[in-house]
Image 1 (cartoon, rainbow, N blue to C red):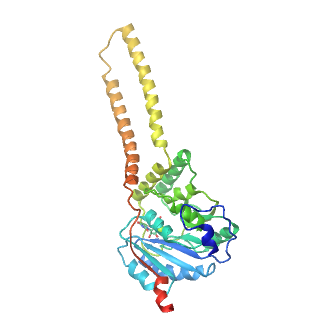
Image 2 (cartoon, rainbow, N blue to C red):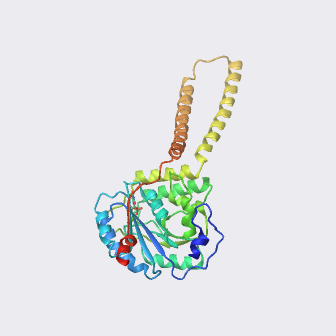
Image 3 (spheres, helix red, strand yellow):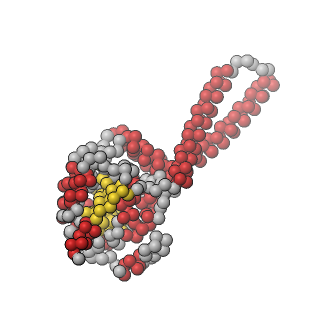
Length: 340
Ligand code: UDP
Ligand code: MG
């Protein structure tokens, strides 16, 4: 109760200065975004429930069913009676970023643990997460030790993305970090205040700040199934990340435009002087054609970049909800009638 009072219920009156002594055994909500993960969740839920008992007496596994087409729903519903599971069913597949946001909006533990539901995030790392949280860190996150499990092309593109972004974005984003994190309640409340629709969670974690601590780890193999993130989904996410956290692409065109204008004025001067001295000469079509093609290409490219930002503005202005919940079943609500 005291905590409730200090942390505040209203989203706009969070007292971030309230430094509570950290509870020895905090309540824990583990957010598990799941898209077609029936096979994995069947094993993960019992094992994770057992494991988290080490740290807490009030555990909640918040499974966000992101419009799965397999029997994820059936598997998780069947577990409601036996495990501390809350099932949040989204009305369709909204993507992992939206599923995580839904989870954060509904997670009310003192500590919120974000984990993939495919079993790729090793439990032992969670020990260190809690250790650092007890030390006073507000956010503890896993960082991929190496990416030897990934293809060389993917590694190269990821590196390129982070180096470009770190040079131009106003926030610093930890490369190789993911959504495997432990968040203090204060960070969760802060994240809930970010309303943007085109989201890259990793950027938002950095944007909210707070003290954060990295823990190196090596992801393990999935329990079943295969990754949902191919090249096209990853590049879409990268583009969202770029346009949400950096204005450099827009500025770059101002610089290129300015440089081109200066150069073309100089070139015009040269032509005038040459014509005055040597008289007009008809040849020169190749240079004109090349110039037109070059400028045309640059203009199309820059208009494309403008379009990318305008598309984001459009989606923000429409102000549609990030996700829709079609059903919420909690082990708590289920148990209540029995207890009365
Ligand atoms: N996921 C989701 N919605 C999606 C795609 C993925 O909730 O549209 C979940 C998925 O079930 C898993 C996590 O996000 O728990 C990470 O996905 P995945 O394992 O496919 O990605 P990878 O580990 O390859 O990055
Ligand atoms: Mg995975």
